[in-house]
Amino acid sequence: MVWTLNCWHRPAAMESLSLRSSFSLLPVRDPRRHPFRRSIQNASPPSLFMVMRQSKKKRGSKVYTSEKVEFEREPSLDGVGAAVDDVDDKGSATTSSSLTSTSSVEESLWEWGVLVSPFFFWGTAMVAMKEVLPKAGPFFVSSFRLIPAGFLLIAFAASRGRKPPSGLNAWLSITLFALVDASCFQGFLAEGLQRTSAGLGSVIIDSQPLTVAILAALLFGESIGLIGGAGLILGVVGLLLLEVPAVAIDGNNFSLWGSGEWWMLLAAQSMATGTVMVRWVSKYSDPVMATGWHMVIGGLPLAIMSILNHDPIFTSGLSELSVTDISALLYTSICGSAISYGVFYYNATKGSLTKLSSLTFLTPMFASIFGYIFLHETFSPLQLGGAFITLIAIYMINNQNSLE
Image (cartoon, rainbow, N blue to C red):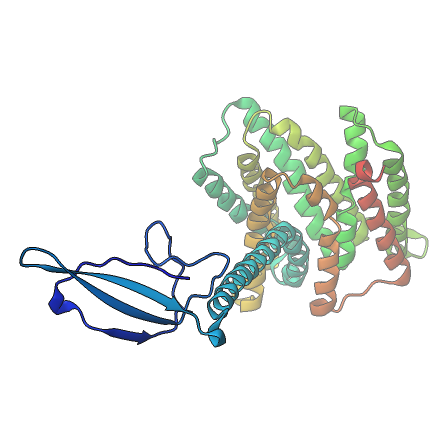
């Protein structure tokens, strides 16, 4: 194999050359742009070359020289260049594949974390609320969870360019939505948490898809289906198993209002009714703006009731609250309401409604786990069975289309 290079020099610049060099690390050159062409079939270049000079005298003052450059390969170095090139190519491909795989895993974990975070915040907020309720009072905790979070959500929606509510229909629908989904729901929730565990209460509250399915069938003509009907029956059985052991019985006197589970069931019905009302509210105003304003408006009656009820926060003052208690209040409002609702709507806009509905069971799971860790709460065997049946019923209701 011979490469020929014609170079034209002055005679003084020419010297005999005998050079030995390894070309294994030289980059591949484009043969159309460089005279030293490396064959694709034989990628290993020669390692020994000799430059032979031939002088040609011409008339005039200048002497021109033609050089013929010949390359010889050393057998011991055959394939070194090709091997290095192959290693470089394979190494680059492996590194690129590894980086892509790592990036894909990180993105998947991030998406999963964002998807699950609202249910985590809602479940853990139940535990945080129960811890601070005796020191601050139920109505104060409920109002504090709503009003600051509502303003944060309104500010977030405004920063995204969403339009504020306008017109009589918009404000009327938001006000009614606030009374049902905010005032009643948070008030019943706070009352129930004083009398039952956070995990058990969360299971009962998250049974609201059962009521939503019934209301949607009655009001909007939505079909329940065979799987949905079976889920409703199982849900009723599960709720009965959760309710019966906790009903307060004192001799012949039956006290339904002394049952925390009953208050939680009322909270679930309020939330279910509010869920159905969202479709009506969204006709007149932006759903995120409406959510923020309904939290602010719904928190005002609870704040008034907190003052009239002389909640401990007004009689004992903030001095009775520890740093942990204040942190629990802030966590309940910021994470348990503002961020969770914001992320929930973010996930909804990304087309994850099916996944969101199927992850409802995570809220009582997180509430039960952290209630056991921090509050040492446990389920009785009958309640544990009822919780399990209720979660199965919720799953059947939320996924009836895919199951059928």
